[in-house]
Image (cartoon, rainbow, N blue to C red):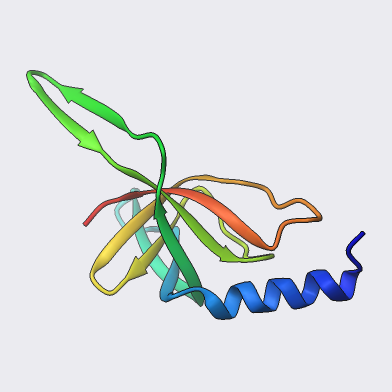
Amino acid sequence: MLSEKDLRQMRMATTEAMPARASLERRFTTPDGYGNQTEQYSRIAWVNCRIDAAKAGHEDTQGSKTTANAEYDAFLPYGTDIQSTDRLVIGTTIFEVIEPTPPTGWDISNKVRVKKVL
């Protein structure tokens, strides 16, 4: 059985081995002064990450146009606070969070399903 010390060391090693650095951005809404709300993103942290192609994607159909939407699995350091309204920005590429997976006690990283926007 792994000790807490072993898990901490594995989590640190995993975080250090993640090849990319991403801006973790959270969506906030603010009043626009005219009775409406404006949405904007603000960086809340820089995080190490790894993006892998997910095994499944889906297609969106609007009218006669069908667009394939590739989904990815993003791996972040264990304990990263990430929500379904967040996004990751790596360089000029934006990945919106589809579904964060709650971590369990034996996980060494957080897994999050994302879709590529740009």
